[in-house]
Image (cartoon, rainbow, N blue to C red; front, top):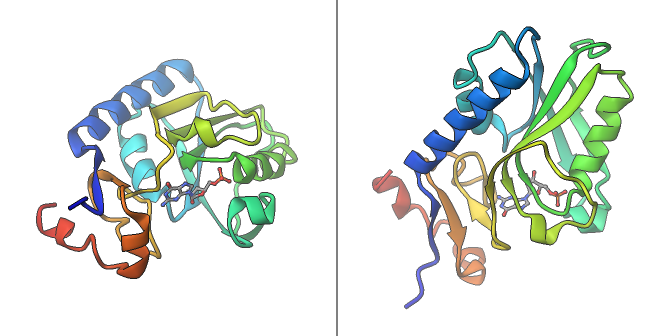
Amino acid sequence: MTEVASVLFGREDIRRRVDELGRTIAGDYVGREPVLITVLKGGAVFLADLMRATPLSLEPHFMAISRYGDAEESLGRVQILLDTDVDLAGRDVILVEDIVDTGLTLRYLLGVLLARDPASLEVCTLLDKAVRRIVPLTPRYVGFDCPDRFVVGYGLDFQERYRNLPDILKVDDLEALKDDPGALSPRFASA
Ligand code: 5GP
């Protein structure tokens, strides 16, 4: 019988890669104090680890958005539910994302942030599902290339579940998960 999901990136691989990203960012931003903006809720776990892996003075800030349907239906139009109050004019900004898929959401967010006149704006995403890209955007920092599968864990959810799984799982049987959204709960026991 096919498992509903299997581990794609384990916690140790994630830790190593996040440490590498943090050191790379620290090297690239020496002498500067970047603003890291994360989109809740998916990016929260990644940001928490990334900022501690980045030996540099930086400021974490948060935004929250909601999408109208999925990215393709909404053409990336999102509603900003929570905005950051930091003045981005003249600041070095890094948008920290959990995953970039079609790129539609990212394009919208980059437009919003660019309008605030940052000195620089880069994207750091943990996962890059480049095969699904509609908008030709290439994030400056990428944790892992992600296959064309639905993934959960390490901040990523299915119907608000599984964000607190320490590993990233790829869902091999999405229909089974839709039928039983709690099907991956036994994974918490081994977490
Ligand atoms: P995009 O606009 O790039 O298509 O969508 C990006 C957003 O879609 C992500 O921030 C995330 O919320 C959601 N998303 C895309 N792929 C996945 C996935 O495989 N798993 C989960 N949990 N969310 C995803």
